[in-house]
Image (cartoon, rainbow, N blue to C red; front, side, top):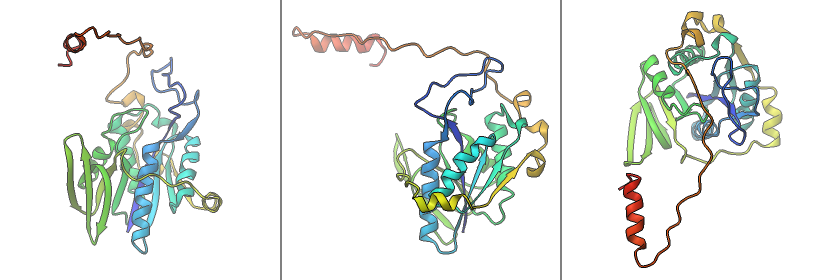
Length: 261
């Protein structure tokens, strides 16, 4: 089995995220960049499948600037076998649809893949639709909000957990699986894994190498764009209710005022 694990490098969640004044895209140069935590969970899910099935292989695929190699090496140090890095300045500002199509082209360079594992949504965009879009582009089933994953023969089975409850899903390979936040805890890379990652192959593709037309990507051709943005307002102090025998009524009145009940 050949498993593709999609990863993304994002600005650290502990640093302030801002938009660029020039084009209203996320400023990725002004903050520390890290592999997205949800992607680490996706890599872990792929590695668990690799360990459960002999002769399996995990290939990391990522789209991003040159420094995204740091995130790729992190995934390789966890245990992935190789990587494909789609990197081209023309990709800057690509929307979710363009990203899904470009990643699909990059995945197409991985011979013999039969399962794609991704995080359900990136922490920098919160769109949560790219894995399903990739499945649509590739014409394969999509299993979402997955917290547990198994493969038996040519069938992938998943435990899906949402606010509506827990369900079991299955599909025939090839398929795309998006991993949720409650999935397996990602492993820490060992020193041996970190050293081994330096020697693992990383194939770098530009648009031409992936077979992508420049008119299909980039801010100028994006289907969506940000026209304006404002900083998040500071937190305000909550309202204190003193219980003088009517505390319950006061809380209910407040909740009604907030249209919560």
